[in-house]
Image (tube, rainbow, N blue to C red; front, side, top):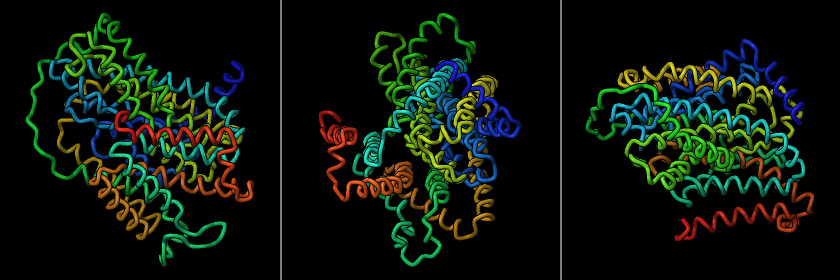
Amino acid sequence: MDFVLFDNLSLGLAAAWQGPHLALLGLGCVIGLLTGALPGLGPVGAMALLLPFTGGVSPLGALMLMAAIYYGAQYSGAATAVWTNVPGESSAAMTCADGHPMALAGRGRQALHYAVLASFVAGCCGVLLLALASPMLVVWSFRFGPVEYVALLLVALVGAAVLASGGLVRALAMVLLGMLMGLSGTDSHTGAVRFVGDWPQWRDGLGFAPLVLGLLAVAPLVSHLLPAAATPAEVPAPEQAAWPSRADWRAASPALWRGTGVGLLLGAFPGGGALLSSWVAYALERQVSQHLTPTLGQGQPRGVLAPEAASSAGAQTAFLPTLALGLPANGVMAVLLGVLAVHHIEPGPQLMGVFPDLFWGLVVAMWLGNLLLLAMSLALVPCWRPLLAWRGLRWVPVLLLLAGMAWYARQAGAWAVWTVAAFGLLGHLLQRLRCEPSLLVLGFVLGPWIESHLRRALLLSRGDWSVFLTRPVSAVLLSVAALLLLVVLLPRRR
């Protein structure tokens, strides 16, 4: 097993260690650091914006670029959380609770050093788990038939809806709306045109690229540019030593390993990833560290280490079901599957066998990306505070969006741009209604897969729906989905 893993990693290193691929990796790290520290666009918006560009590069280069944007944002999301008490990336929201009090006490750079090193250690652990667990998960998944895949996809959608913010009804509505939109256009089996009326431009479907651009890039920026309520300025104390002492590290290091463990466990869970992992890690640390002074929420370093480690580990392990099973854990991973669709590569268990250089190249690139991000993040620690004070920084995401839209208009035509604008308006309305557009994207991706596997399952069972309950694995998975719904509907367990 060890020799096989070594051979696979050698294959991945040969695939990733090429000039164009390394350049795309570096570009992804830079974009990830910038978008992670810029409230408004975020890594998902940047990935959506760059999705149409990925068709012009190799599949491995495109995956390296998009993956680096996602896990790179986990390194810099703490910068705005510490200095301005506004998370640059959603998973850094819990870092505000202790990172900003540390900055007000003159320990802002210490908080950023805690965050950067926690992200690096946890990220490397996440990639190691991805390399070790993916082959075993692929072997296990080959036992699945269409019946089991339908049940597994339903568990993914229900799990994402249950763990989403804004209420279960809104989350389920987003998933169902996304599934209906994903099934729009001409049915490949019957030739019937569904849900698009007499619009010939949508006969082939609504299109993944304009949907993602509108919902995940345009809509967040519209909300970001709306005037916000003024908050009183807080004056931090004079800055103390930039690096934590050895005693501080020894006292806070248990939170690093607890946060990493939480991220490794929850990152691959449907609806999980960096955001869920950081929330759970902070809640766990609050229970474990009640005896400490200062307590969590008052500038405790453990309150920075735990969520940052969990978010980085969760971001890495979210790739596990996406690459091994073709099952996106969240909306970000759904965008990553869109990259494979642009290159006409079918995700799933066969990916590792048919494209081993693609799979293992991405795994090795994630290790290289974490090393590069560590060096870049440590160099940027002294620069974040003056950079974030520049008012013109607010318009950088807008300029990026306008540049991307101009390119998209040249490539896809005016109709596609109007479609993006319509989806952007829809995404803004959904945000005002406290709904999660990422769930709509997840339903859009998984809806056609569920329909395809459902048809195959019913054909093999000659229309017998009881096959979903008589097959043991399917019955267990459907029971898990029902249990998740039941738990969240019980007020005492909510």
